[in-house]
Structures are given as C-alpha cells and as structure tokens.
Length: 143
Image (cartoon, rainbow, N blue to C red; front, top):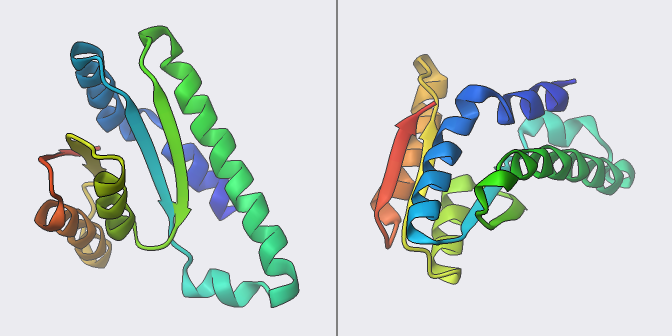
C-alpha cells in the first residue's frame, strides 16, 4: 500500500514541477534528460520480508516504479525531448552525484518538499549534499 501511495506522489502535479522546468530547459538547449529515481530501503521494509522473498519483492517494487516513470515520460512525449530513465536503490544524493559525473551532465534539477520537522532535516540534508558535492550547477525548487 505504501508503494502505491508513493507512486501516486511521484506522478502528482507538484512532483512534476522540477521535471517541467527540466523539459523546458532541455527543449531550449536541445539536451537530453536523465530522470533518476532512487529508492531508499527503510529498516521496516527490510525487516518485513525474509531473504527468500526479498528478491521477488524488490523486483515487484522496481517494476512498479518503472511503470510510474514510464507514465511520466509518456506525458512529455509531445515535447520532443529525450528522457532517459534511471532507477536505482541506495542513497539518493550519492547516486545523483555519481550519475552526474558518469553521464557528464551539465546541470542537476532537483525538487524538494516543503516539509517540517524531522523529515525536513533528512530531505534538506540530501538536497544540500547534492548542492555541496555536485560538479555542475544545481537548480533546486520547491515541489
């Protein structure tokens, strides 16, 4: 159930705001977009599944993420911008920095939620790490 809700948020209008800006930039610069989604396994998720079902569950989770990301790409088909999907598991900020270097990106566009409390600390720290360690300019925007 939690995954379904997350996929819905992933494709919600507010979550598309950073991608809207990236698409506009890519159109004007005739650039490609690499849409990176990093899934971070929580301690509760790890405990909930034994080792025999972990691979099956992970495959199911990744398949749902890919389906949600494919829907997003289809929404931008008329904009004639190439959008490459990258799906990974781990720490988001590390993946963003590593992929930025690997693909020789010119810019990172990243959204951040307007959260409060402890969740703000974690989200903002990931965004701040991307800003701090990125070898290229980072455009951050509130979703």
